[in-house]
Image (cartoon, rainbow, N blue to C red; front, side, top):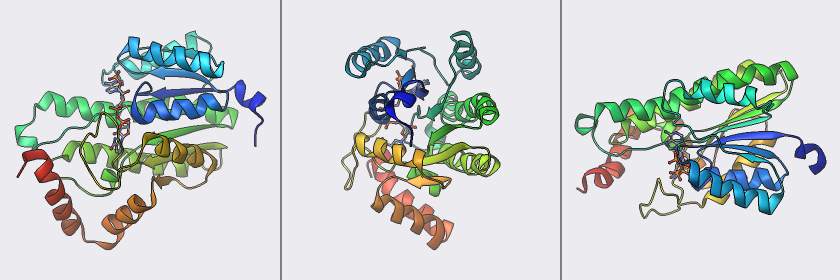
Length: 262
Ligand SMILES: NC(=O)c1ccc[n+]([C@@H]2O[C@H](COP(=O)([O-])OP(=O)(O)OC[C@H]3O[C@@H](n4cnc5c(N)ncnc54)[C@H](OP(=O)(O)O)[C@@H]3O)[C@@H](O)[C@H]2O)c1
């Protein structure tokens, strides 16, 4: 276990960092004395969050504003980090978007945007920052997936598929790196009370609880963790006990009403 003084020299990059789950994670990491690089599109909102974290925890916080769904954004972030001389100890790929509705009624460009952000940017940022961690023999990458990763989700098809990619990709990279000293892990929240999910749902969790799970995942060993006991049971049933066709039908029933109101 590192002392706070040692942790103070470490830096975490958190995407989607100014709101919801990302903001709660940055709060925990700043509380450990880590310097932060906060990434999202809204630069003013990032800077407001950074001001608060600097004042409260005395850590250094930078705020490169980027749209991570853009093809060149991950490499621009990596260049920015190199130019700033920032050695990244922890990467949290948290930025994400969701959409509800049948694919046939969706804007095709928005479907592509969602996949580029939720899956493409996660894979590219992992591939960009992992080599230096492996070379140093330490570091951590947390990829935020979702309980939606564990079964197809009609009316949230691209979202669930993008998170299934994150989960599968992360499990595989975990296996590739398990003897390198680098920790790679997927954390899957279920319904969490953020701007992304304003629906009234039983058992909804708070962003702070998810952040606590992320912090304990950093200390753990396995490749994938589901946030919350109820969510863990649900994903186990959906992915291990039920046939895919049944799991899909159940997901369809619960999402259809939310998407179509009927
Ligand atoms: N809330 C839930 O029920 C739930 C459940 C399972 C998984 N998750 C996952 O948890 C993660 C965090 O979501 P949240 O619930 O905390 O939602 P949120 O409050 O809406 O946060 C999403 C964050 O991502 C950033 N973002 C969105 N599009 C971006 C883009 N194109 N480029 C860069 N940053 C972008 C947003 O900032 P800007 O708008 O400033 O860019 C925002 O800070 C996501 O990966 C989500 O899929 C959430």
